[in-house]
Structures are given as C-alpha cells and as structure tokens.
Image (tube, rainbow, N blue to C red; front, side, top):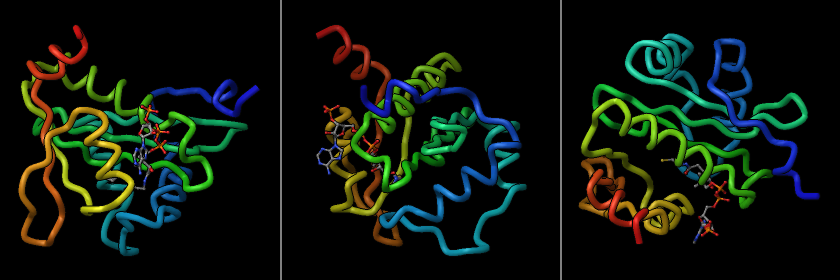
Length: 153
Ligand SMILES: CC(C)(COP(=O)(O)OP(=O)(O)OC[C@H]1O[C@@H](n2cnc3c(N)ncnc32)[C@H](O)[C@@H]1OP(=O)(O)O)[C@@H](O)C(=O)NCCC(=O)NCCS
C-alpha cells in the first residue's frame, strides 16, 4: 500500500500553522527567508482573502496550499521534500483551483523559480508560462476556459 493511501486532504486551521511553516522552511527550491512572513500573513491568506488546505499523514502536515480568492494568486503550494512525487502537489492544486473557480475567478496566476521542479510541474498541469518578474521568477497563468477545455478532452 502506498503512503498516499493514508494521507488526508482537508482545509487547514490555525492549529496546522506550525506544521505548514515546517514544510515551508523544509523545501529546497523556492525557499523562504526566515522572518519575511509570519502567522498574521497566514491568517490573512487562509481566513480573510483566501483558503488553505493541508495533506496530513500520520498526524503530520506533509504538504499545504493556499489560494487567494481576491486576486486568483496561488500564494503557496509546498510539499515536504521527503514526500514529493506521491501526487500530493497535484491533489492540492486540483482542490485549490476548483475552489478558486467556484469563487468566480476567470484567471489564476503565480510565479515560481524558472528551471525548478515547480516550473515543470505547472507546465505539466496546463499552466501557461509567461515572462519573468523583476526578481527573476517565471510568471504563470491558468485561464478558466482553457482549463475547462482541457478537462473535456
Ligand atoms: C512542485 C511541487 C509542489 C510538486 O509536488 P509533488 O507532490 O512532488 O508533485 P506530484 O507528485 O503531485 O506530481 C504531479 C505531476 O507533476 C509531475 N512532475 C513533478 N515534478 C516534475 C518535474 N520536475 N518534471 C516533470 N514532471 C514533474 C509528476 O510526474 C506528476 O505528473 P503526473 O501526475 O502526470 O504523473 C513540490 O515539488 C514542491 O513543493 N516543490 C518545492 C517548493 C516549490 O517550489 N513550490 C512551488 C512554489 S510556487
């Protein structure tokens, strides 16, 4: 039986924040400098402007995602490096994009380091690569119409 069989995907609560930060600081690509973001940002993004989800396994947060319903921005999608390649990223991206579409958004966006695993992951998931941001990240977007058309194929 694979690890994924025991993994639960659910909406996050404040009690998950320590586990979410642990995953956030464990990733090797798209790392976060300590102190740049804190629980207040997490509360704003998961309770005010958007929603967050975790994948829990053996009582531990292994992956999480946060989407902003006001802007359509994917604020976070992170999988603990030891738990990559089990479909957690895909499951989180799916539930998050469906929720964002349900909020009436027509276009979603994000930015990530070029040449990272995430860059390949989003291309494979149908996101369109655009130009680079001022700090060198690759911008991506997903339009609702093209996502719908791909699902109907
Ligand atoms: C990018 C990330 C979210 C992917 O999560 P994951 O759980 O390992 O991905 P999954 O197991 O769900 O894989 C989903 C699909 O992407 C594919 N994929 C993943 N990495 C890939 C790569 N480097 N090249 C090609 N395809 C890749 C998988 O094969 C899979 O495709 P399939 O479902 O058609 O077989 C995860 O690696 C991560 O957190 N990276 C570090 C942090 C980061 O950069 N986050 C994004 C910030 S914007």
